[in-house]
Image 1 (cartoon, helix red, strand yellow):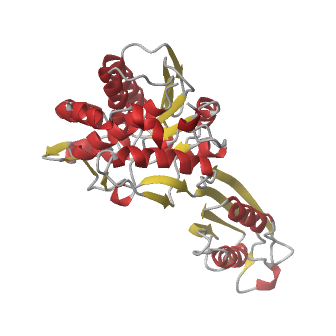
Image 2 (image 1 turned 180 degrees about the vertical axis):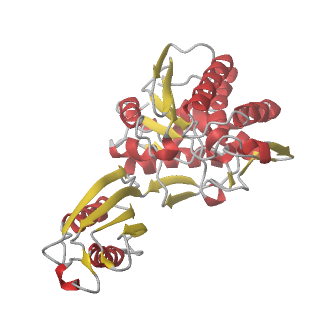
Length: 400
């Protein structure tokens, strides 16, 4: 078995696929194409907006019942109940070899009632509707990948499927649950939608959300302007400093997206705030921005400045482990005559948390399509079949 294992990362080498008939898995999934579509429609027709806990609870209950019908009862189940967010569900299925974690979120950005104006539609190879691309099709693919392995009598490793309900708002509740579920995994497969051209995602930027608060000194702008210390003047200086820190070549963007301040035109502003979105492609860039924020000082000594917030998601850099699991997936796709590209993207996912733990992560293994968070959101059914087969092969390669 030694030659089947990447000697640095414990990720199976592409030669491990010699014991997996990827084409047969694809044929079986293609024969069940109509069932995949029916499952996706049933899942997508249950609205699960991130801010509606009642709908999220109903959606998760449906998903658990459906997954149990498709895969049978799990060996272990843990419901992590949240009060203000969607709950998280972990189900574990026995297998041989090191455990794998499969990550998927069931919440969407679409508000309750969206389906009334934009129902789920199936038109040939295309399924459209709110949440189908990001990321309910990927969730369906994950379950069907495991079902295909079982139908073919192919062994799989212990599997830990984690469904979360707050990914679209930064995973404030589920982050520690995700980290616990990924800590001992041989690899983490994230069924988020693919990038442009069907690329899987081997690098994601880290995301920082910060606020700068300034307290100045109010005064009459006409009668006694020098008695004041303008918070708006201070925040304007901060904006130019922060925007100057953007470095597109480095992959760093610093965007002040919201400004608030002042009370009246004839009053020297006593307060001002700026809300900032930061994206970084490396730990080094993250540290540079941290130092910049920590070093911000008010220009006028009478004004006070403070920074709040933090890093919403850590950087997912393309490590050797990530490269190894990508090589495995690319080799599986090649057996279907498909060239599987990779991409580095600016958006973050729960895969960032797993990568920060040092786990080999393959992200973007979900739907092929487009329109994430947009009215033209859609997926390819052929893409669902293909990606489910690739995911099944990758999973099977880890079986010991």
